[in-house]
Amino acid sequence: MSTAPVFFWQDAETTGRGARVSLTGPEGRHAALVRRLTAGERVDLADGRGTVAECVVAVAHKDWLELDVRDVAREPAPAPRITVVQALPKGDRGETAVETMTEIGVDAVVPWAASRSIVQWKGERGEKALNKWRAVAREAAKQSRRAWWPTVEALHSTGEVAKLLGTADQALILHEDASAPLARLDVLGSGEVVLVIGPEGSISPQEMEIFEAAGAVAYKMGPTVLRTSTAGTAAATVVLARSGRWG
Image (cartoon, rainbow, N blue to C red; front, side):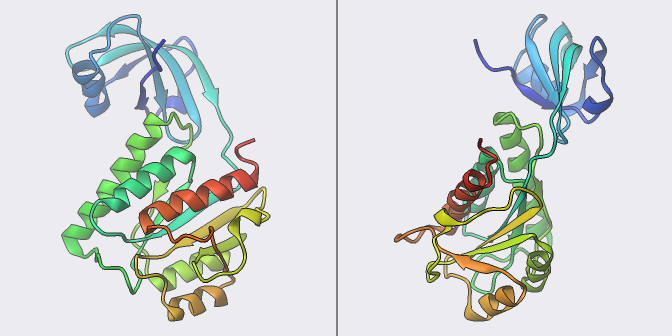
């Protein structure tokens, strides 16, 4: 039996069992024209804020669907909330990082303009790149069947990242020169955990000084050095496992 496709439905929280709803717009067109869903097939609607409605296609129109709601499930927000600050990588590696971090359960991704980042997000190019990251996160959240979808914040400067670290309940930096192993970290079971991933050229000494002054502590993954586009997913996996969120 194949897994039911997931579509965005902003009114899922206010939709009750037994209701008939219309899936229109881009989501409806994709369901009807691309997925070619027909009457009787299972569909799930998610609002990205913890509510998922289990539905069945009642009527399939040319470019939209009528759905009967069979059940509605509401999931509490995951704890701790895990935010990854991702330095801008080259090419489309940022999109890969966002996709895989979304799939494993990261709650927020913060793009960071590190001093050693080769890529720069400026003007229209920056807006386009940010929107791409957000679209990737949204599609990955659907694919991985998440009830809570991650946010992708606006581009942050080093100073803004430092403020984020200063308000976190647990502030971490992944760095190859650190001595403490991330695998042995005692992760908080609640609150906000913020993890910083540096660029290809590593975090500069000045940035490390600023982040450590904000209360962040540096950790290492192991004997190898990871690409920035894979480091966030690898480190977040450890944090998720150590936090107890994976059971």
